[in-house]
Image 1 (tube, rainbow over the protein chains, first blue to last red):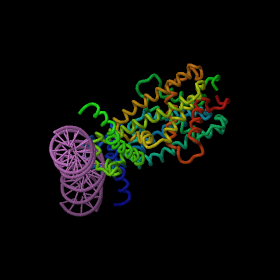
Image 2 (cartoon, rainbow over the protein chains, first blue to last red):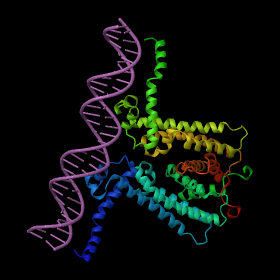
Image 3 (cartoon, rainbow over the protein chains, first blue to last red):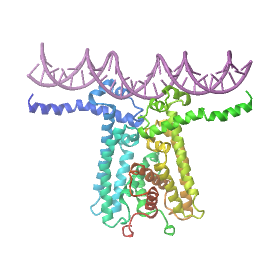
Image 4 (tube, each protein chain N blue to C red):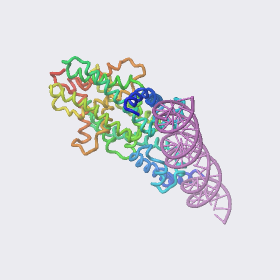
Length: 212
Length: 212
DNA sequence: TTAACTATTTAGTCTACTTAAAAAATTAAA
DNA sequence: TTTAATTTTTTAAGTAGACTAAATAGTTAA
């Protein structure tokens, strides 16, 4: 088999072998997001695709590796969404505008995206420890973007010099992530409004001038 | 068997039957906090007590019920700690002082307490969905205490009237809970300092006057 | 058409939760 | 003290689900 043919084959087969793998990932993500990691048997995933459970092992080494791929896709999804929202801003945007845009992207990805993102966040805690560890590597990459934006804001003199940026970043993301627990049930606030409010709290403070 | 004897028996047996149940809970909490819920087999718990796994079923209906009891104890523990910290304050304490005291109690319970609290927080996400649901009921009771403190602060005119207290409460607790993920490795800040810093962010804001 | 390769199924192993019945230990009664 | 009743633990088997290896079916290349 010469190289040329090999390449052609690779292309056409991508819509065959890879398609099956993709179908498995899709079905698994949908079931995981609905019934959780432990609540979903490989049997269930195979059934949804009219396959036998054993067949999954041709495409994935283990249930663990399967969910890891879903987690990776979901997290990359969040990163891409946030980056896009920030890059869409005009060049001369203020520090607060940048943080608000990032917060909107973050919440948007968490709350609006599909099964991969949903599984990645909602079921993260259920996943095997080894998978969570891998996830943390990606999350670190994500958080370093936030670190960059915060450092820049402080260098510009927009954030008080006394503020510990590490604690700030963790607090802010902790607050945003908590939104997952209560949002969605048709409240009166949009995702963007919630993001603005939450950044507003920490940017301007909640105390009246009397109470400071 | 008359009532008198029955009562006496109940007393002495509390240090026998109940003792065994307590031992199981202790051993399970220790193992869960170390190896996680899924990483701990009933076999492991029984081994630690020199029993057989089947024996546990005389004291608990299931692994699920076992971890639920641990979760309940752990969460009550947090509630008690926070209430105590706030009640220890002088009567005329400021709104901010109350919130800081509550935050210190919250972080203290999460970061310093034993196996029950640790399991309740660190392994919450791994627990069966039904257990998490039960846990949410207790957490709701806890959060309503925070709601009370925040309402009072706003009524006093210490928190801006425009602030949405629900979002504030969830943000604040989300931020505090996130501390679990990074604290402990012998940092230079104490738990109380971290609590003060985090409440400070949201109380006073992080922006310089220029940037507002 | 045949040979090589790819994909799926089958059948069974292993681990861990759970259960029912038997056995052991403890307590109450005679 | 002995017997009967009750409590607690063990044993042995049942079940579910992840995983594996061998067999089979399907597809592609020569």
